[in-house]
Length: 371
Image: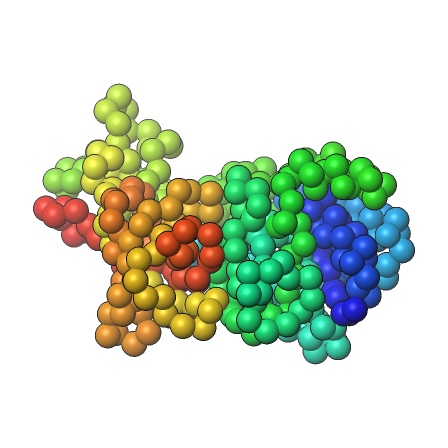
């Protein structure tokens, strides 16, 4: 039996994770993290993960399970580590992934450090991902733990956990990754949890209405500049490069029926470049300071995923000789790869998450001018 701290968001996955661990005989304590400091009038039920309703749902689940429960206010840490860098990245023409950043600095790695410092043996979450040790299901913390995709591939969240180190995985439990989402809800009903039918949240938690541009407009000053085509011809104006990301098609308002996509964003010249879809094709990307869940650089063929729910493509990993940066060579071109996105590497069977990093460079198709 291990002493396990369970991060309880108020949703069905983390509540069932806690219930499964109690059933497995662990000494379980629940904690709800207040992360996004969203004003009460701006909270949207079912959107985000830090509303008053979410905290109450997590508390009720803990009461049903008969486990200790706490609420920790980490909103200031979340603001400095996630929200502020989110806005700063867009201002720099970079596309951030706040969920990866949150897992890296607050909700997973940061919380695990706190749990271990308090004497817990492990941290558990409701992430849909699996842990294996020598091919067997992990139910106790211990060495040689590997991160696998979830049983329910459609709900797989191993992408946002690529930042986990071997030591961190050895102190982690992810029970719901072993069951499909429908079964998670069925288990919630069997445990008597009121969140059994609660809808999943897909929004950035600190932007509950989903209006990223509107959120950024409240935190960044206007910075107008031109929208140009591949030849540098001015097609329009914008109010700030932070309103755009590579691969974007909607919201360009160029007054033409021709399909154009954002192909480059340059904060230093306040320029947004647009072009046809083929101008988005990339066959390699570089990531700086990658982390590997196995502790070692992958060798040989791999699969690479560049979006949280995107398809993977086969490729290889090559050290660049520039510090610890690596280049990911893609056997199939991907479209819309933006600087700042996470590129996550999986094994040849596309099952084991090997690690990854943030994209710092990506191929520009031959003949495409540099802004």
